Image (tube, rainbow, N blue to C red):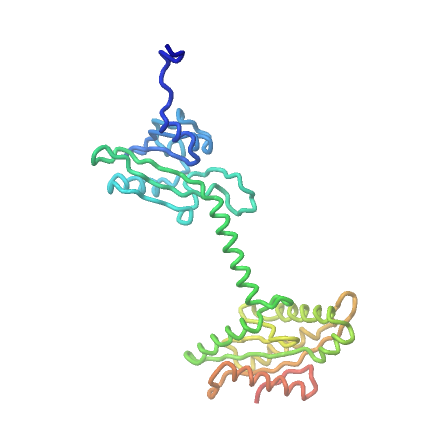
Length: 317
């Protein structure tokens, strides 16, 4: 006779699977009373099956999304079909801790949930809920989204100064010009560049020249409204888009920008570099067919400022 004779039978294979599987499994009846609670749920919640089974799920976990969870379970009882919830729809149901680095950007285990009807004949007698840990997938997706956002930002900004690059500036100018054509109003832009910038590079070196460009961007950004698009057109040339701004106001802003740039020398690694700028101003007017025409008129005004002695602002006439 076997030594095991007379002993109570052990758990079935299906019971072992439910206990050992790496996902949460619990069962509730129509009253949300817990009928089953596996080891995963015990380990992550801190409450054993003995503590939970036979009690309302919400008594054991009062911070659960009660209305949402009740609605999900009732729909399974009513329709007799599966229901699902992904971490993208609701990041978590239970506030389970996770073991990933805090740099992942998630507070609790991210969870996918499946609600499965348990049938006797045609009657749903209980609902089995499975909880899958989706934290890794959520972290990877968040990192991917952050990387895409950074790439998009890099694509729109000048690497040296951090302001808009020419491509992005022209796209914003094109949009503003199209709105002006459709709605009317006022629209202006400035083009300005640093006077004798080649001398800066030749006399002080390109490192000092880069420092001057960065400081120019900083000084101008400090005196213009943040909603105005400010960009580097290339080299030492910059542009400023001024929606809802007429020529007189644009000239006032141009002088503000010019004075901010030349207010004091730039300290480039201990070297004092004097800087001034010339500025051209143009405003949208009847007869301009594209935003490129506005850029050309601002460029003509900039040439006028240089021809008249530099370190000054000129409007397109």
